[in-house]
Length: 246
Image 1: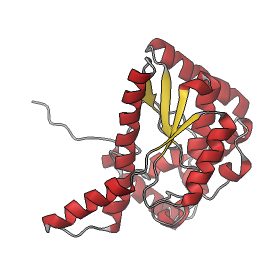
Image 2 (image 1 turned 90 degrees about the vertical axis):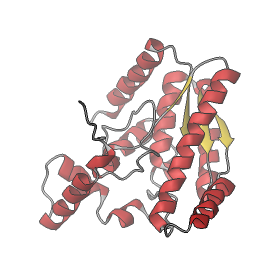
Image 3 (image 1 turned 180 degrees about the vertical axis):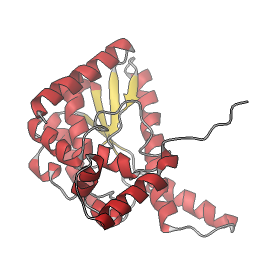
């Protein structure tokens, strides 16, 4: 991949879309990891720092992620807003417990957080649209490997208005980050969801390199291929909503 060429193509894609739809700014969640950092860098390069707003949304989170997000925002000179969702999350779980209808699981709590965060991003985008008198949209940050195996939350980080990394594997995201001068400590920080206390690869049980190999039809062990194929198949419901038409 020619990273420099791809950066220019992505910038043109962003600018063309904003011009066509009379858009003025973009809001994105800044997690302190590589994907949101690369998306931030691309948006700043395409739109200018004054039209990009980052948001941190701690929710029983690792404080280092917020520190890295602040460092990243300072590096690119963007506005960074903080919406602490801890009390909101706790209210949800307390009210759910009162229903006595089910047991709250680790997965239900983990998935609630990105859904709250996405609602927050859209809420902020609408408020800024009025305040700044220009239309803001929400940028997604998922990469191709994550999307292939369904490593995202349906109704959470899957929801956005524009995607710029969905056709790039993790290794390609690193290459884009290098071209965009994303700070090394953030670009090569161990990928994690910031929610479960585990790295992405620990949760998935496979490496991103192997996911990319399966996507590109390269050779991997049969066990690994079967595991990745199963994740891909089991998560197709996240992409397609079955709809009955009369």
